[in-house]
Image (cartoon, rainbow, N blue to C red; front, side, top):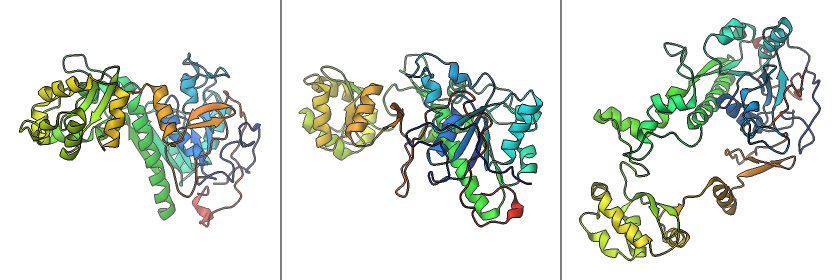
Length: 411
């Protein structure tokens, strides 16, 4: 099919670089066009990762906006909900009412000229608008279409894909929390984030395959399988033994000592992974005899006698502050550290030179965790205001890759 002429309208630039995100000279994904119909967390997180490396992401929102625009407080200096802001930088916003002919036509046009379409509606919603994979692919055979669902498009299609629900039915809560306490969720929407990372990987895999075949693909990611895959050793143990693991609080099912311990003033983590580290630990604690005690000489023995070992370690740790112990352990090669709050964690990462925070227009944002030796993520514009880029078209592409023009929209 023929593309609409490549023009950019309704697109006043904002940001430190003085230009809109996804421009022709921005990043390793420059020229990649992403029609983002997703909302809340999993989809927007994935598309932000693409935008950080140069993809041209147009966020297509309903007239009321992404739900997370309204999840306040907290808000930033501009009044933007920090939840929304955390996953929507480097994008442009176009508000379209898909219940109108005009809005639906524009949505279909963007989908038909995009390299990537991503959505996370319940199965069947996009089909009602003629924006499902089959419909988009008919007009755009090279499209990489990513669908994110809670429980797939089969028997679980009708189930609501909320992170808390998936943490519960997916088994994560059963192994999180104290043994005698109630099942606990993670302190962040972890399954959504895992799903976003899988969506990012799936999209990039499909784009690589398109380079080889010239054809697009349907990438299907769901929260349930993202969590089951992330259960790794706990799921493997269940499959092999037939026994589901139990909650161990902050302890590890296969390693000891590997837990949170109280010191004189606050908690710290000790994460011993082998006998050499354990021997060093006991020497620093002034308990060298423990390393030769048959109850603790091997990891298997330590796991079997973990409660007795814990009492020995706690007694020694009470003699000094947690920061003192953490420094001593780290100097000796024993993995240990303070139980930081989020502000302390960011400061700690900064002290290591990891550059965990980036600035956009004077506001601070958590940096993209992916680093390439050949290119860097860039932070050009803050999260867009709703419909800030009304009427926007794709950014012009300065050069086209070598490809068969009959294949449809360019790579």
